[in-house]
Length: 311
Image (cartoon, rainbow, N blue to C red; front, side, top):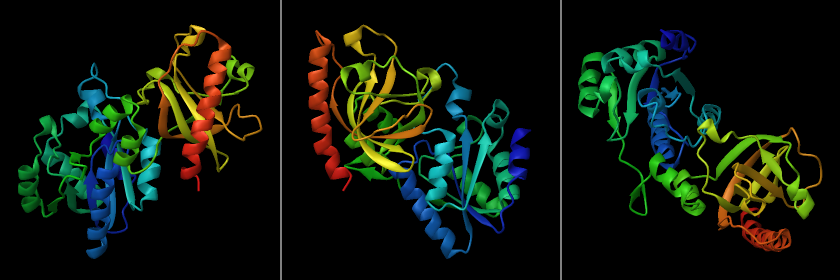
């Protein structure tokens, strides 16, 4: 069983207090739980730990109903470690893992990760058929000698923060809401690939991100966005287009960003684009000259918005 070999590679130096879940996006609700986890772990002289899964269980349990993910596993691990979590255990989610009983899974976690307790939200469930709700976990905790602490759901403006809520706001291009729910800027990262250089012809060269649209990555809805692009450790104000470039009659969806005040060759570089605010919907212009005039307006508007963000 693959999960056994993965757990065997992790050797905690002392007992742990764990949170378990996908933690897609590591959003503000997750951060609230993880902050409580770290506080309680420090009080009990335990290591804080997160058990997460890759791929998303939904893709295994319901392969024909894929959920777009907010952050890939590498970004998730990086963010969790930046938040100060001591141990991040990434387990491959397989049909075999899905068939594990709650008791079987918790036994493995307790043994290999030296688990002394878990902290979960009130809607948490795991194990075969999601049988492991709070009541079952508490019962197992009494039997197997681990604590179960339930943390209230985290809300913003009366809405429970969730990955589903973020995906909905993201599809609408409501980046202000997305970023508030995430507790950070939503971002896309990737390598800059060659393009047809239409942007350069218009006077606004763009960096095309290597993000296969079929990769499962959640994207903001089509439109033009004020963004902050990180290149070689430096931040640049930018304008990013997500869409099919209807003025040129193209049907392939692209993610392309124009960096303001940047000189140099970006091809082959890894960049990170943080989405601050949507400027407008994507639209078709009668001519390239009218498109160029609109892009000039977009750049001016982005400069005003981003001047406040990049102080």
